[in-house]
Image (cartoon, rainbow, N blue to C red):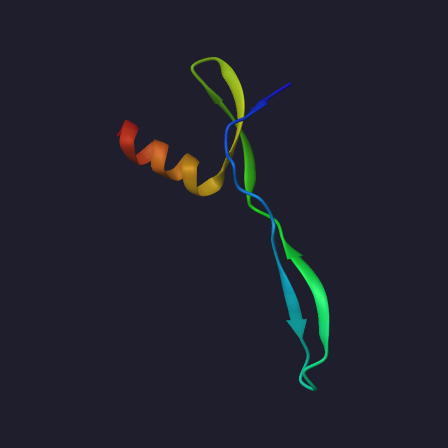
Length: 56
């Protein structure tokens, strides 16, 4: 099982229609499974991108 490294949580808010009716919505973070140094971890796509930039 992969260990979760990130602390990101879903964003909550209201979806607004043209008539301004509000319905609850949730935006989930883009979490990816990656292998780093032989260990499987769950990190966000932005964190993975940053780590790739630092490694290069």
